Length: 377
Image (tube, rainbow, N blue to C red; front, side, top):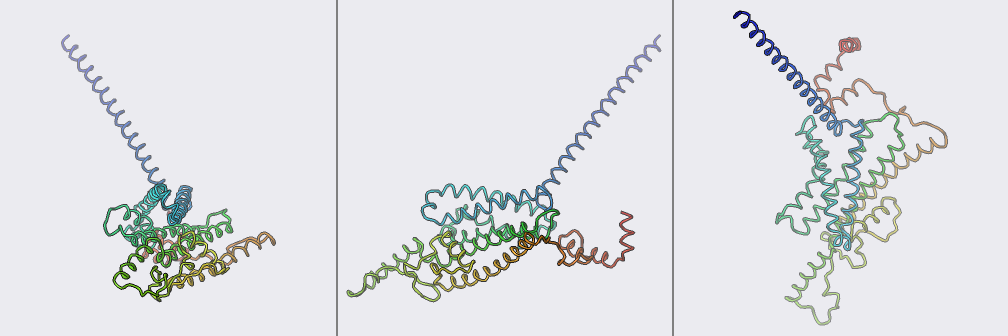
């Protein structure tokens, strides 16, 4: 009887132990399942974010590029309006808000490209990396309360540097050229590239002209110059027969010394300089606005040459469009050299998909070796 009771107790303990083991096993399976689900979720999120910055053919990449281009356009337009006196004082808070929102998007774009870059140091010092950095750095510097950054000239330089963010749109245009999307209309793509280039030239040229020439007769420059002239006249008064104009400050070109009379002060804002830039780019030459300073004329000459380049690009696009619409011809890549093994490997090395050593090994392989290697894969 005692043996029977001991046996029952042992059997009950064994059953309880079995239940505990089954519960532990089920809990471990649930934990592993949850961990796998969490890992899959993190992997999918990582792949999505990676595609936003590194896969030009993905939908998420194109949407992000469209958002960045939109804020580039908006920030550049507001940057130009900041130089117009009534708007600069009335809507100053709105300008600051738009600039902060745009810089947040640009900062996210810069950090994303930097984080997912195969070689972070190389990207940081690359041309596009510096363009991304320049697009956000002036705004952060202006927010900091540095004594060296509070001068009017320094703020104007920061404004000029900020306009270089328009070059971020050029990267999207170059990626559109490199990545030929199947089914896309080449005429529409070429027109997008043309208008991006046109907008970039107008913004940069107008801003530089406003800075190199318009800065000589801003209200602050005129007030500062008049104060210096008044101080000089107190020390050395004018003769009694001097004309009244002699006591009024006249801005001059710092290089040539040519005076800039009041009726020749054209570039009082970036929008005013935009009108001059459009007239110059289209080779219209109304003659209503023209630079008087040496640097202004050098910039005008560069703008004229860029206008000829843009005009040639537009003629090419219009010519292809007429051939398609009137004669029914199709734009093909017949004139483009066929892709060779060397060009494909060069492209893969450039994008850091292959090392140079591995690309050299593949280039030295015969077609039979490559076919055999593909079969093994």
